[in-house]
Image (cartoon, rainbow, N blue to C red; front, side, top):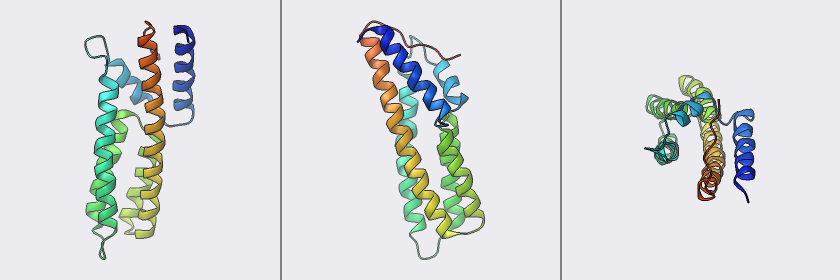
Length: 151
């Protein structure tokens, strides 16, 4: 596939990620920090996010599995996940975390468990979509092209 076609696919995929609410402008700001001196910056930051979120989701599962749930501890984990998802522009993950925190405030275990499943699902979806985006970027670079910038 030629560079122009790959770049066109990249634009389409990126546009759909924003249009479907997976990403927000924070992701664009992250992309703007990437340059020739650090060409893998965005994928490295995103990889760190997913590594951290896996641990947080596991911690959340254990905390909600307790006989007596420590909702302050659960809320602290959700707050951390909300902050890190905001920092990479993972809008749908952040939005579930906002709802999750309301259930923590209400000490509603069922609501928290439901949000935990939802946030796991959203993390999985955005991870899959970003993996596709990064693979496409690698194909563009391998074909001798450059990664387009979103304005």
